[in-house]
Length: 329
Length: 304
Image (cartoon, rainbow over all chains, first blue to last red):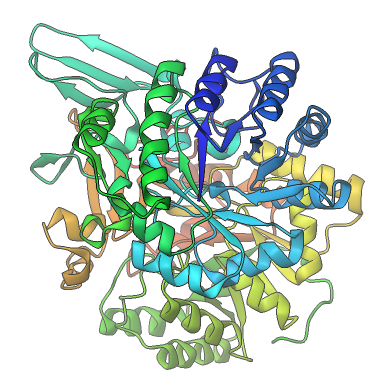
């Protein structure tokens, strides 16, 4: 079982490798990937350094080109594929059928993983992507229960990768337009959810408000910790009840089900967070390396200090098993 | 009904009634489609797209409705579930795809897989991620007869796709459909928000969506309608309405979709078919309606 870590910068990539990541995933500094945030990701020069370092460590470099290509300027995406290959990518993570076809046709020997953004949640969808584009691995959306993951694993011989830790997307990925509904920009079209440029913090005497493109997402009392206004994690009213109507500010943490994931033959556990700092990546990688090693050695029990560390690094300092646990659904 | 790979491109606009997105009881559904038979729709999409636990109308009853709709001179299309997780859902989808009578609106790649394997014609529904001409061409080659554009895309995006498609592949030999009226399907989750709003676990939901035939409005703390919860689906807070933009929609698409929002959809259809431009303008109520996506801005907003 591979530990796949995120890197939004060369320093983060270095930290992940030093702490024992089996593979690192990165993206270019543009809207060809689903973490298109200011001040992060890789220009060609850094990319080359990254791929050289990954090779020195004898690890794998995955490159996410997982937004959907626009009709005008399609070449920005196809050239991203060309550049990634040229600069030493071992794996491409893709979701758009057009890009899957392009990569499969032009680089038949290259390993292709189906991005979570393609939202493949069942064997027929997986069969489609295998048949059409020879994908080798599928990254499963965060909508499946553990039982469904186990069943999928039994009914396909493709490699399966699951999200293990990090920000929790509660909607079927690639099929959520909440962000563009309020801002005009979505993960599919612009590579970002609730983009930072639309965020506004408004302070009054009695509370702090977070707005996204002018829409009120949450309102905090002076003693409450305020969070980033990801729109599905706001506090809204349903009739007279005020609550987190969609989801609380919380992070996904699957550490406690690691042995079940391993026995389900899951090929890789993915840490979310290319937008996070090198220090964050270092801490998370360290914990997960220890956990996976213990699990592989057949000597796994959840260590209290792992959970403490992971909680400290979580959104709202809370974690959840998300959809893996039926009661969450 | 299945014997076509011939050109379907018609010269005049056709109106389609989308599938019912909400959970309505059996009698309401039966009465609704009984009325629809006499309405002036050209195409009627039937079936449950949101939640496999919604079984007020059985598969065979949906087929019966499809025959009734066909008998009234309209095209009946069976819409498939969007989020397919359980094996039972996959089996139900396979049966739907192999119904042998009616076209299927594919709302998950799984449906396209089954339909393409059987070389059956299909409609690519709005939940299929098609954002460019190359992926559109792939679906065309797999048997797509009609494409319903993803709801977040704009008039300009549609023009761009069509232009690029023509220059890369030649004539557009399939129909294009635009979602033009109704609360927009924006997202799907494993979580049932409606059950959660009643503090019920999903597995013991007591079919509480039946209590909310228009979904439950999610308001911001300063009272703006942001979203509508509809089981595992999240809909737009405002009712999308392209009635003011109809001329532009007609220039780009052959089929206009109106999504069931009320029992009397004939009234909405009448508004769309109204020839008096001024009267048409008046059917757009800025407080409740939006056209932002079509105008390439935030979906919730209005361009007048």
